Length: 241
Image (cartoon, rainbow, N blue to C red):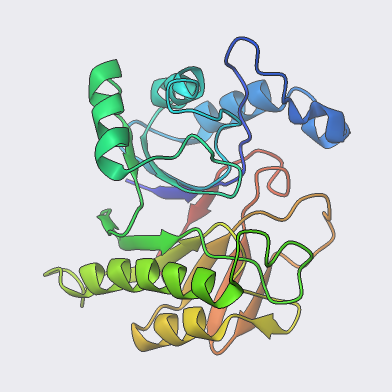
């Protein structure tokens, strides 16, 4: 029972949704079918795939049905996190009710909580932009944004620490935005990760630079980029340490 990760699928399968990422170059050509083909070649029904954000271009939960149905039909269990373009994202209760209504059986959400696989404990949050990014203050007070996301991260980390398997399984964290990059970091995020002993963080959001190092280390934590276009739409397996 393997665990995989891939973010930034940017699906746009709903009727009238004209947000295909194919306008961003050859790497994105036929990306939905490429993703489906690669996924089905790798992932078994008993496996888990974590998708840390930018899943659907839809602006409503109802509008995301076609994209979620596409994911539900793929092999494996899918654990979804929120990205900056997931405008369809709602409360956990509303999203779970929607899944139940549509009879989606293989999807769950990473949202102020922890999920467990055979080898790992999984938690995370959307995160936020590094200070100095052009849109870092786009949604209001920067410090409040960081504080809110830190609370969400710590809720998941604490939930993981409270599980009976906490001492036996590695705790992995998943962000949409990179919590550290280019020698910069968001200290409250890394403080929490250090406190709970997280050694591997997977992040997405970054596109277009296919020569960037696939991972870097800060404070003894490995940070691994898993944006779909960077991975050429091949889910990345997470191997136990």
